[in-house]
Each structure stands twice: as structure tokens, then as C-alpha cells.
Image (tube, rainbow, N blue to C red):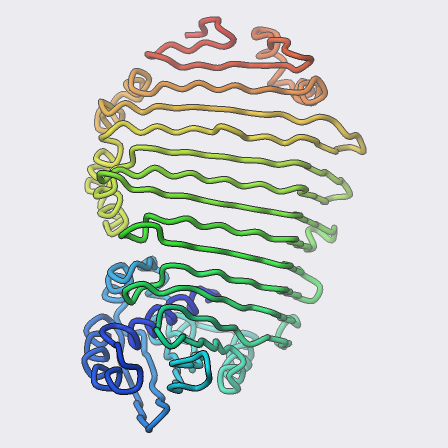
Length: 446
């Protein structure tokens, strides 16, 4: 059964913002004068508007997700992205919207958004009895408005804030499942009818399937800001205090715990070429399985990519994945300007395994894909790629890590043939592929 999460909130939020802000300067008068036109636009773009009720200072209507392809195109035009398969999974979903004008000192408009039914992608499945029981319980939750988002728009319709109702539910079926969500709040800015900034916070989420698996997430913060004329020009990031996953594997406990995880990304578009930078880190990652415990500390990863052809990327996102010829053509266009990729940092400072604590490793890498690379030629002769791709990788290992690797018989032969360099007490391998020739630590290999 497909799961639908908080992504729905973002989808509906964009639709509601568009519905209430486009072309509106006077909150209570001009908005209502424009409403029929705005509803007509929504109906032309994959939605249906049902059961509309208008009163002096409040309104109620239902948004129905009817045409996934049109919905994808509509959100792309509004600066928001949704995949076609995700939109298709939402077909038949109905969202209730209760709106109040000039509800308080801050708000020009306040809305409650809540799903009224499950999408047909779920309800039309061939279900077992326990699944039918789950559907009944979910429908009961929807009827009671357990899943509800409240949004307030300011007097200038230039910013918004809101929250998602806390959830404390227990679902009965083959296995008991408990769901808890607390402290989900958000705020943002609107520029010319489009969301230009969103900051979100979630205090706590827990999931517990009795006798099977538990999940817990604490203090999640996310942020997004559009920095240019398109949704691609943006900065975004997240931080999580802790993620804890536990489960049962062959009657043995399995645990994964991640502490202080952070991530940031920046994308810039100049002259139809994109460059993007991604950074991620975590202070600790713990694994436990089959009685064995492993710990990683000080994890850092940084990745950069440059010279991505944006018109080709936009076409590729809309292309039919079953059309291999079209996909290959667009990928060729994508790399036509000469793509450059770099890992400035990938490091794990400390590793604990078998009860021993040792120093970790670090890696840097760079790759250039020449614009002369011909994908069609590679399919007939993969060796052609060697002359169009240049790479350089440096791996720095602690002596203890190298000793662990040496336990693998497959690694012994390589280590006998290629000795690492000794640099400041570390073991170093430098691997370079240039003009079709491969070398390790300056010695030709091929």
C-alpha cells in the first residue's frame, strides 16, 4: 500500500496560495471578485472544485485531484515540482478547505486544510481483511479531521505561518501500529503569488509497529528559499537531532541511530547552465545487528557539480522513461557543455568495530566529462569513454583501516602489487585516469 506523507501538505498549500493571492489586492472585495476566474484556472489544470459555499466572512470548498498530468504541469508553472507517479498516486483525493477572512489581527485569511478521503490508488487495491480494517480506521481518522493543516496569511498576502495538528493514533490490525506527531509548525514568504521561502519544524515523530519495527525522529528543521526567477535557483537545508530505527531480523534486534545530522544544498543557474553544491554531515551513526555493534563518528560529505545543461534537464524530467532513444538523446544534451564533478570532502574520523576504536579515512575526488563524449559510441565500445573522462581520486587511510581491509583475501593481491604511500603516518592511494591511461600513486597501471 502506498504511503502519502507530508508532501500532500505542500501540494495543497501551493494550490490554496494560488487560489487566494493571484491578482488580489483588496482582501475581502477584490478577492471575491476574482474567485470565479481563479477557480476556472484550477479546473483547467487538473483539479475540480466541489461543494463551494460562500458566506460574508467565510467560505468552504473541496479540491479534487482529477488529472495527474495537468497537475504536474500546473505546479511546475507555479515554481513547485511533483513527479507524475506521485500525482497519479493522489488521483481521486479530495481536500476540504475552510477559509475565514480577516480572522484575527495578523491574518487576512485563515484556512484549515484536511483530506476527506483516500486516493483511488489505495481504495481500489485488492485487499486482505486486515487491510480493509486499516482502511476503515483511516477513514474514521479523516472524518474526525485528525489530519489537518492550519495556515494564516498576513494582511499583505506576502507571508504565511501555520501548523499541522498533533497526531496520537493507534491503528489495530494484524499488528498494532502507534503513530505520534508533535510540534509541526511552518512559516514562509510569498512573492508574486509563489512561495519564495519555507521554514518548517517538527518536534517529534514516532512510529511503532508492535513486535516488528519502531521509528523515532526528534527535532527536524528544514528550510527552502528561492534565489532566482526559477525554482531551480534555490538554497535548502535540514537538521535532525536524532533518528532511531529498530526492528527484528531473524529474531535478532537491528538498530540504526543517527545523531546531529545536517544537510545543505545550493543551486545556481547562469546562461542555462546549472551548478549545484550539496553538503551533509552527522556526528554519529550507530549500527547494531546479530549481536555486533559498529559506530561511525565525524561523518562529512561534500559534492559539487557544474555545467549541467538546464533546458535538457527540464526536458528529461518530462520525458517518457520507456523511450530509450529520447532519454539517451537528452542525456547527451545534458552533458554537452562538459560536466565537472567534485567530492572535496568525504571523511569518517573515527570507527568503532569489534570493540576497538580506530581512526577512519578521508577521500577527495574530481571528474571531468568532456563535451566530446558520445553515448552512442560508448554503447558499441565502452572503452571510448576512457578518452573523454578524466578523474583523480585520493584515498587516505589509517593503518588500522588498512589492516582491516587486508583481512579480505580479495584485497591481499592488490596490496601486494600496489603499495600505499606513507604520508604523516597515514596510508595514501592516489588514483588518476587521464587521456585513457590509469595510474596509481604515479605508476602506470594501463
